[in-house]
Length: 380
Image (cartoon, rainbow, N blue to C red):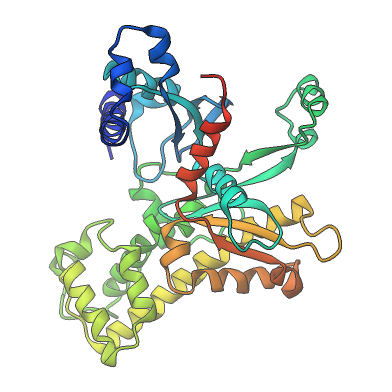
């Protein structure tokens, strides 16, 4: 997505205004009354979920570091996104105050902590596995290097012992010293809007899985293994040659298709890519799909396990740990959570630790958590 900062935040403000008019129309009367004090007192608090890397200096301010997930709006980088949104809200005379900025992972952690049903243990992590991926966890304040010692002392005097950390683990190992790298990963990175960044995310999240599969299929065609009825690459259906048109949603169907001769996969490929296939080709596509998804799920298990170990979360007798997760991949991709758990059991926390780790969906956690942040901010 490319646009300008004004276009984006004006659009967001207009949608907020439409919501307020529908559900709290009476608030506009105070806004237009001329009574400044009444208008300020009557404003609704807004929790702003912003799922991109920011340098957050307070609950209600944060400067955009870079865009991810296909967004590319250069004039926003280095600016306070809360101020940008608030300015357009004010321009449109909407009775709303942006009281809190929250990453979606932080929101998921808070929402699961507050609303989680049938929880077994303390919610220690919030994770997103959807269009992108990221995680947040509770850290002891004395371990946070960015906090000055006097701030740590002040917080401890108020009996505050922990702070929620947004890890931005989507950017883990951008230097590619640890992550697996195939030529398909390189090709996906080359066509992305943030080349060289968020390399972990580009192997795990829903936005990129279908594009990895598409590049594999193109390579197998070039080798003369698949789609041999098309002599040259330019003869292939246009949709197969177009980046980003093969979705992870389609992959989820390929993953579990057990229909006779994989008819469901055949229909999906024709509908999505205008691509006719043989039974053998569909079987190959299913196996490749499963390999891509398995790699993604096993990589997804790594940061969860690493944070559990870092927090020493199992310290104590029979301690159970709850992890709140949200996102289309973890919620809807068939078997993704099961494959994650299998990978966690293979790590140093072992099968016993895996059984004490409870990974549960925090439905709409990012928005619910942002609302909780706004509710907790009394400085309106």
